[in-house]
Length: 481
Ligand code: ADP
Ligand code: MG
Image 1 (cartoon, helix red, strand yellow):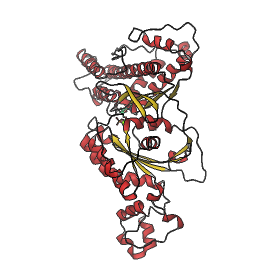
Image 2 (cartoon, helix red, strand yellow; image 1 turned 90 degrees about the vertical axis):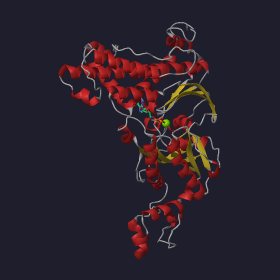
Image 3 (spheres, rainbow, N blue to C red; image 1 turned 180 degrees about the vertical axis):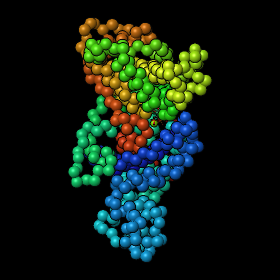
Image 4 (cartoon, rainbow, N blue to C red; image 1 turned 45 degrees about the vertical axis):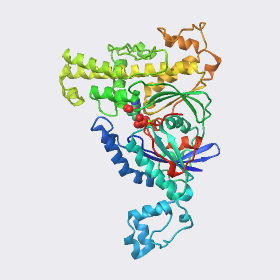
């Protein structure tokens, strides 16, 4: 079967087609039109602009995705119409070509010279339409919703509404296990060469969904059975990356920008002022002079809070400014980089060090709370999802922490109460059980962490609650049930 997925919850217009046969799947197409550059000018997503861009992009993105499922003859080019229809070609604009793509019908009632294959149409190829119902920006969701309702109505195919947060979790099923290359095929994108088996993911699974709009810990007991066990009380982790990057003058999106600067500080530390023997041993003490809080690290629950971290960064910047250590009244990156000599050097070192500390503060809290929750709920699997899950350091830290849990104990475990000082150590020791020997970590490929429609399609495959297009409404505040 083939599912066409549509995602427009925030600032990515995405359409994907997923083909599933028994326990293998193939991402036939995976088209994403990102508005990041448009919103970068404003330092964040502007809902009205996002909706307008979705409206402009949704049809070209659908057509691009369909190109991968239909033989090229169906996607008539103007040149082909001219060849096939002679003088009548003038009446066939690109809009007509598009109609033909969707319905397989020649609107002029003139049959072009067709090969056997051209009798195919999108309607006969696609079995269901999956679409993000929410949560998200209503004006953005509405565009994807109307496109999905239209296709569902015209093609007479069922509609499958999908929760965006749940879809982020399902991106873990897209992890390619095996790649089959077909030398005869015309390889247009990576999706076309993948033919993968579904990974074997054991339940219960503890899922950390971290993106620009969401920070949630979700206990997944089975397909379709989800329970929120923790969430942010204010800003999302990605939002914290974005807002602190803005304070540091690093631009939007903040996550990758902070990660880049943090990496610069780290590599400067490891190449300067570290003895050759230590460098060889790969043991570095990357102690930062800047200390930021780890909000709610020791709280007696699985909730998060990131707005205090953002405020702490703001105050540090103000302190640095008033200590006149090289940062002027204007803290934009442009001004910082234009500063000269020592001033410039001090400022950039400070920014890099801040970025490193912000990233660490966010990672410390996310990793500690996720592992603690996995322990409490006897999870067999930890899964990550959402844009922040693309962060290299976060992925590395999860791998290391879980690997540590699996080390054979050198000393008897010391049980500690949640909330005590040094509880991360305590949790590590408590976790030396048979269950934790089985604990597996899944992280989606980084391209599936940020918003995409392949995750919408795969979520629909595992949760096929089909409805009529007439009954579908987007819901900006959609909850996990
Ligand atoms: P949403 O679903 O809320 O629109 P996405 O899942 O598309 O968000 O993720 C976007 C968020 O992920 C942004 O806040 C961005 O800063 C963050 N992000 C993307 N890449 C990274 C990274 N490498 N490190 C940290 N954060 C990242
Ligand atoms: Mg998202």
